[in-house]
Image (cartoon, rainbow, N blue to C red):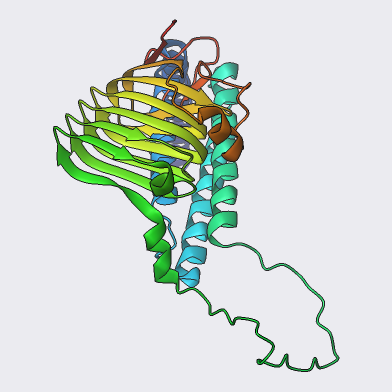
Length: 314
């Protein structure tokens, strides 16, 4: 009996020593990863993958979805952002301080983008007191015209632009674009002139083309464009999956790029009659231009400029 107890004790001691040795090796491997930057690299890959999923989900939201579906999608995105923020906090032990701050800034910015989109697509009803006294109906014979509610599908008439064109010069006049949403897609070897102040502009799949656009009161979104030149003025500019392209811009917030390379940014210099008046109509401050303040969502380092974009000095 004594021998069996001794053997058991030896086995337990050996097992304990083996566990301690394995833990020491694990700690050593972790230190090596941290020293080599491997852990930070793994974090960056995971963070950018989660960030792209969130941004794609946000970009897919539009008024075509019902309010219930929109609410469900916003809940899903909220959980994704919360999960990403927790991942950032849990990774603080091995992340350089500047990477940590940058990841926190991006997470916060995405939450703000989501809240802004929620306010646009699911606006809260304004509270108003209702009078308990019944109002007398207004007689219809007083010459006042009656107005009917505008159907939602008429909103589509407010969208203008060009699609599936090649080798053409395309122009939108003041009347065609002022306070309207503009869409440009599937253009090759084209030159596009947009005179006026659109509400928003969305550009996708444009190759080897030039686009000149007047002041945009809200945002410009660009995706999948190559070998192009853009002259743009807007409040917000977001560029995805674009390469070898030059942007001459006037932006009052900042330009945001993601999955881009070899993109250049310079000052907006295009001019046409009434341009200054259109800046005023678009509510853009002509004195504020952050053309060189570019935020690369694929670059977390605060002490180094992203290699994916360059400044065009004029």
